[in-house]
Length: 102
Image (cartoon, rainbow, N blue to C red):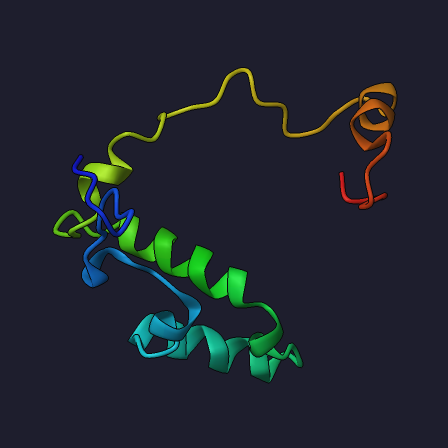
């Protein structure tokens, strides 16, 4: 890592950036937008879904430039609950501005 006078610490090449604007240009992004539109969902309000979908599709590609990043992901999450008990949910939501999310 190099620090210079402009405050730049590191630079990410554009080809490694996945944004909703970039996803909308891909074949898989276009297909997802069409699918969401046919079932009555406006995909433009769900940019995060477009990015998540593209990451999932890209992760399946062994030739992906991001494969070294994907390889750092754990293969399983034994400590990560898929659901919480009611009292745990209450604790997690205490003070949250997103009630009912969990």
